[in-house]
Each structure stands twice: as structure tokens, then as C-alpha cells.
Image (cartoon, rainbow, N blue to C red; front, top):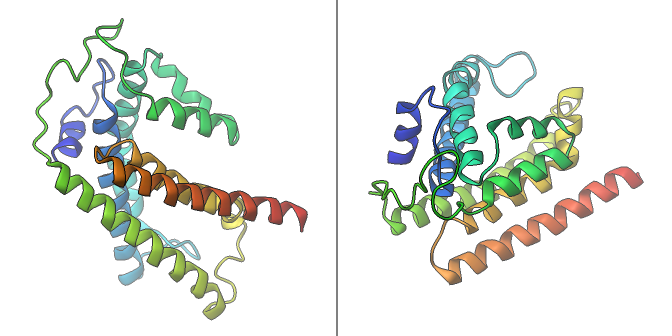
Length: 218
């Protein structure tokens, strides 16, 4: 949680560097709060039409837009890239994968043109490895149940995925799920847990690729 708060405190700070842990811990808590916002929208009936999100989601997304961009730019600085490299995400699929690789790349050793290595600067890390592992476990469990939920829901509500909004995301949802455990594998220190996450992410990746190929074959 401290990493998330650190990013919020550096709300408009696009200078300096951010290590992998800072970026991915912010991303993790950001994902959790987005899910909470979507749940509130659905429970309170504040969704935007047929979309599964609404007022709370948009307000939260707007609030974290700038700090999210700022920490992403600092993460790119940490691997020696210009913050403008974030624009490669605009390239369909390939750009997103390229950006993901950069976000997963370890810090440049020593000082670069954007500042000192944040690891060498001894940033205060009060989050224990046990806490991180627990958070990762909770997210993985959430992934399992959410996949099951969104697999069953269309059978109950026939037109849930009928809108064009979900057309592209449905094709690549398996690949999106694969990113989460693979990303966390770079955060945990325990080798056995890293291997477990890599295996889980690999399974999601293979399944996602299979789904994409089958979608286009059909």
C-alpha cells in the first residue's frame, strides 16, 4: 500500500525513476480499487447503459490517470527510455506487448540520464515479502473466480456480451489474464513461487493464444 500512496504523493512527478516494484505494486492496488469501483457501480445501479461500469469507475479512473501516467513514465526512465515511449501502446497489440516488456525490465544499473538507481537510493520498503505474496495469491484467486463468473454469466444473460464494446476484448481476454501472473512472477523473490506463477501465466498464455486462433478461424 505504501508504494501506491507514494505514487499518489508524486501525483504530477514525471521526472526521476521508478523501479519495477513501485510500478507493479501501484498497478496491483489500482486493479483492486477498479474492481471495487465496478462492484459499487453494479450494486448501486450506476452503470452506464449496458456497460459493466459507471460513475464510481469513471471518477476513480479520472483521479488516478495522471499519477498512473507519471509512474509509467518514471518506470520507462528507470530502463533508460524516454517517457514518450509510452505512446508505443497506441500500436495495436505489438505496441502493448513491447511496452509490457519494458515495464518488466529490471532497472539500469547505477545512474542514468534520469537519475540514480532507485534501488541504490534505498527507497523505504515497508511491505514485507509475505504481504506481497498474500496480495498476489488473492489476485490469482480473484482471477479464477472472475473467469468462472464471466463464463457463466452470458449463459444467464444472453445479451451480456452482445454489444460491440466487448468484441475486441473478448478475443484477447485470455492473453490479458496471462499478463497478470507473469507480471507478478517478476515481483516475488521466492523461486518456487516465481516458477508457479510462470507456469500459471504460461497456461493462461497458451489457452489465450488458442482462443485467439480459434476466434479468427471461425
